[in-house]
Length: 167
Image (cartoon, rainbow, N blue to C red):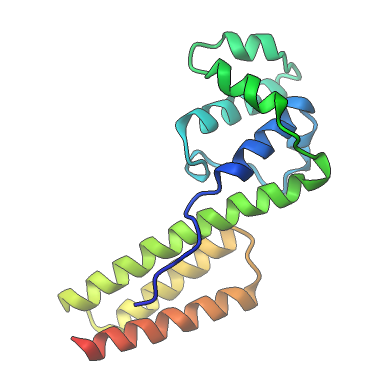
């Protein structure tokens, strides 16, 4: 089966996005959708993002207050404030994070399909239908264009069929 070569997380994009938000809290309102904890590679990134969202909802983004939170890595905040992030690239950072999340989801779905085929637990048609549903759901959540989702589903079908022949 084809392996996914792209990184499963994009730490650089996460840091740049967090840096943008720290420097200008209104950047949060420019994001198409909120990110989820699972979108981040490190707990410290996820906790900082959640704290930034919480403070922005209260219309109070005080860096000192955020840094005083014992759950927030102060050094991370200081390092992020020094980054050369650009508000103009905010959506690019966001998309790179979402694409990495979609790749992780795709990897999990493909592994699940492979395990189901190898274990011969279910009919192949059922496996393929479940895979298609999972992929459409995961990719649509990540706002990946339908044409690209169709390409991914086709690849998964071919991989599953090839695997079933190899068994």
